[in-house]
Picture (cartoon, rainbow, N blue to C red):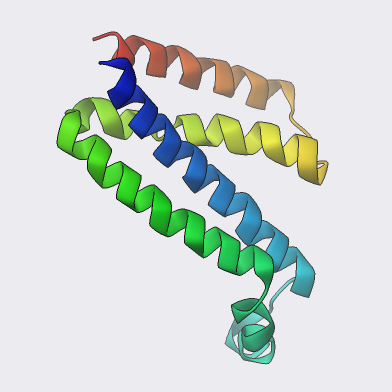
Length: 122
């Protein structure tokens, strides 16, 4: 895979991961939502929360970059690269949200990164 192709894939993955964290910040702002009734009660708050809006913007941008990446890279190589997002999200959630990373999660992230490295070199 060419470096520029990898950068398109990586940018799309990182924006997707960022979107998840922004959406989580919006969800944290309203607390746990209990069913559809609970969602109706907080819908406007969520719709205009900066985290939700930022997350949706990141999703749109990540889709555009993903389409560019797919035009340049085989889907059998590009799609497994999405799993980098799991690692990025876990690390950022630990750093920004105080979420714990157990030894099992560390091991899983190592396996993911090893698999991505193998696929990227193929």
